[in-house]
Length: 205
Image (cartoon, rainbow, N blue to C red):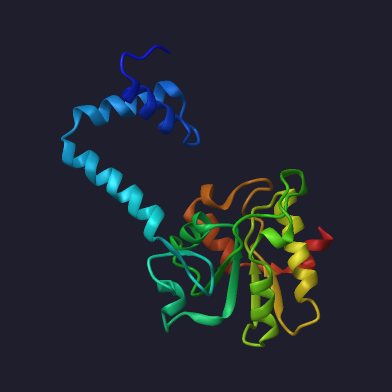
């Protein structure tokens, strides 16, 4: 792809680094921005810079937050004895959209995947185990995607907290095997949370 401007080429290259965006799509986006009022482009660039420089992660659940403790963890109406374990913020948003869960979350930041070089120490697993050890958690709900990596992560965490008196459950398999949570419809995901099953039962299936 030939460019008449180095500035244009650089902008297209940077945008094409985003997932799912090729150079042709990046070019369309850049040309669209050039046609817009300069204030809109300035607001976009400022928002991206602020995102990278000012974003926080909740000190309790590791969810993305503007402050030290996210709104969910700080909400006194949430059930702090029930924790739903998810991979990332997209899963929190998907479950919250159902309106069926009133506990707290714990965002792992990924799944155990040896082939990708991701081990337990690369995830926020130890802080979850610490919560269980403290004795303030009654139930852990595993809500990772039903993939090999998700099941491996669930089982690893289960073995870490097995010695402690905590109920473990997993979302019901209304979610198809291999599906990601963020793509599930709200009704199916909501029912999967409400009709969760003991984690031990999932090991037998």
